Amino acid sequence: MALRSRRLKRAELPADTVELARFLLGKLVVRELGGERLSGRIVETEAYIQGDAACHAFRGETRRNASLFLERGHAYVYLAYGTSYMLNVSSEGPGVGAGVLVRALEPRAGIARMQALRGDVRPLDLTRGPGRLAQALAIDLRLDGVDLCAPGELWLAANDEPARRSGESTRIGLTKDAERVLRFYERGSPWVSGPRRLSP
DNA sequence: CGGCTGATGATCT
DNA sequence: GATCATCAGCCGG
Image (cartoon, rainbow, N blue to C red; front, side, top):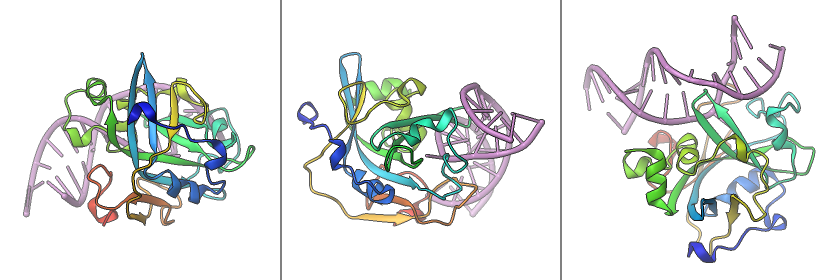
């Protein structure tokens, strides 16, 4: 299963940010860690688009958000609240600052290693939330800017499993442009984060 | 389960 | 010095 994962090609990724956020549901995030492969199925995403005050690129390119301006399919990793790393997939064409936040995964491979990285938490809390999944996959600033469509420590894989029903809602935890409906999730998944009312 | 709070550090103004 | 796309822990129902 995980050993046969096919890396996504950049050409397969929708150029539009919202389409990419929907497309990524059900795909796999793969982390190569010391010869071991960790992976999880993406069950929740959020789009951060152009003209969106909540997007880190809203006020132009800076050192921190530079990866958002890379061609689609690159990792944008940053530290939130001094405690949690966030994994995003850059979207759109080069020079355009936009991306998709990966908010939750359903663990697939390397679960024992993830548990070791997360400490003693309930299984359902292993990768439920953007900070938690980053910790479970040992994602930090060193992975900022990595090409997720190329061989390496972190990449995206296709998934031949049947697609599941998806839902949408407002995004979580924002102080700006919080009313936009740009969060996408797989219906019925216990691995989705946030309050229940946002994931009916 | 829902709601609240403090911790915490990179980044930008 | 202010901001912040979170989390764990704690409390009440």
